[in-house]
Image (cartoon, rainbow, N blue to C red):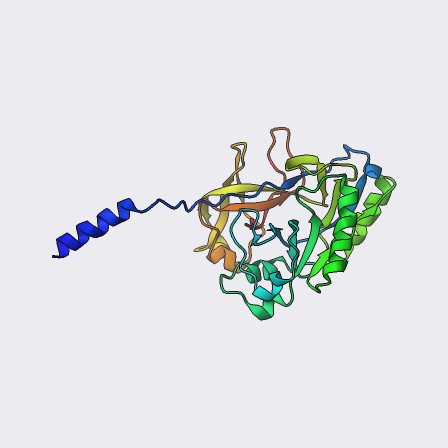
Length: 279
C-alpha cells in the first residue's frame, strides 16, 4: 500500500505545474562615480543616504533584488498607487540597524516605527528629472504620511560649491552626495545621469575564499578573498567587526568594499570591507 501511495504522490508531483523560485530584479537606475567629468550646474544634488534601496511598484515593496520586503500593513497601507524608488532609512550612521529591521520576515513593528521611506525617483514617469523631483515633493505632501518623505534636491553653481556641501555632509556623519542630471528623462541601468560623490569610493565583489587569521585574529577570519565583476581577485583584511570575524560572509556572498583609488593595473588601493551588499 505504501508503494502504491508513493507512486501516486510521485505522479501527482509530476502533473503539477513547475513554479520557478527565481526572483526577477526590477530595472532601476544605478549611479556611476563622480570624477569631475560633468558640469555640476546641470545636476540636482541630494545627500547620499546610508539606507536600504526599496522599490514600490504600487502594490508591493521590494529590495533591488526583487525579493519582497515584509513591511507592516500600516506602513504600506497609505502609499500611493504610483511606483516609487527610494531608500528605507533611519538616520546617518544607522545602516546596520535599518538593514536588520527591514530584513525580518515577520515585521518588527516597533523597529519599523523608526524607518522612513525617502523617495528620490518616480519610475517610468515622462519628463525631465527636475519635474519628477517636484512631483515627488508634491506627492509626499499630498499623501501626508510621517514615514514617506521626498529627498531634498538642490542646485550648485560650480565644483567649489559642490565640495562645500560634501564637506558639510561628511562632517555631520553623512556618506556623501548624489547628483542627478536635471533634464534627464527616466532611464534604467548604470549611467552618468546619476553620479555618487563620496570621500571614499565603493564597489562590489563576490567572496571566493576565507583566509585564516594570525596573531590576535588566530582562529577567526583574517581576510576575505574576493573577485570583482571584471575577474580581479584581492584580499579584504580590514573593516570587520569582531562578530564578522567570527561569522564572516559566506563564500558566494556579494560584499561592498571601499577604497581610495585604483592602481595602474586596476586594483583598488587601501580596500577595506564595508558591508554585505543590501538586497
